[in-house]
Image 1: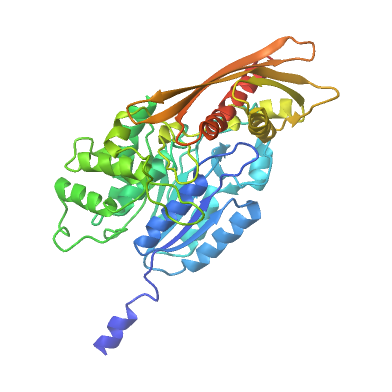
Image 2 (image 1 turned 30 degrees about the horizontal axis):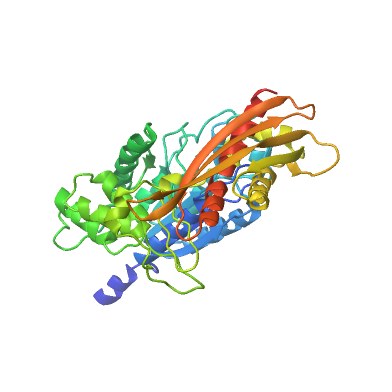
Length: 480
């Protein structure tokens, strides 16, 4: 009888479930990292025992459907239910909305009608009567609506967490979060590193994530991004990764650092080591982390689906560390060394919704000159950037604007690492059909050439063309 009573007290399920949505492919403003964040965080959660479901670039009906299904999965569970959203998010009349893809939002009424209310997620999770519910919203990045006349409120609004829940925001209410300079957003990068550490309670994971984000944002961005949580958790401590027997009574700072390091020691993701160094710049493993970070960034490219070893032209890591940041563009058998701080900037980051409405379908004619003999390739890259913000490229007939300018490439040899390098200077102007200049912008970039100077030149232009197009049309709209 005692055995039967004991068995009866055990819940039907005691698993950890996660639903992760990463929306990047927005017509209103493309984001680089949400899809990466959802995929990478799903892998981390899966590695620590979560049953994970990941969805990328979801429209409104798809989002609502998977959220309803997630609520069903959580019913009467005794573990952790975690919902993660990365993408665009806005507040309207004090309520937060998660924006789906495949809809050209223009005003508050459309947001309220089509977008997914963040409170909908909480309602489904609360109704499931799951033991612990965690909602993570990394949804305040480079908000495309901030310059729109119809959506003036920055960031997300505060939210009340229902009993047994924790709601985590990537930044404080009313502010915007960094989309990150590498593969992952700043907040998600630190969250992934901390969630793997054994012995940290759910609350401690988010506390340490906040500390890491604040430190790195202040150092690298010159402003503090400060994550926030609203918690109504109750009962005993819950862990993403259970503590070891020795640390069950409470881990010391040294034990936490060691556990942190052990959780990333074999990682090939540079973001893990960047996160460690941000939290422990003088830590016991700082020098080793720097070496691992360098190795992660200089991993050879895969060719034809097969892993390749570094070629004989690859300089030693010590010499790469002493060289200037930049990417190596090379041909077959080459390698890649990139500085994540030099991630390409999308034209949409500069162009607001109201500006995009103003320039939509305007006809643009290109008049570019370059000294590298790559006219067609350069034109193709800039045409893609123009089309990404709603413009039309034309060669003949009536035009609305003329984009003209000069792109200069200069090659030299870097004796320090034994590679050629390519530097680019681009100066472009935007003129009306009468020839009057209405906007101007410049961009500079550089890269190591590896075995192909032409490939390097094209790579630099691919990285910088979005920036210069965005600057041009930002100035153009400001003057109109």
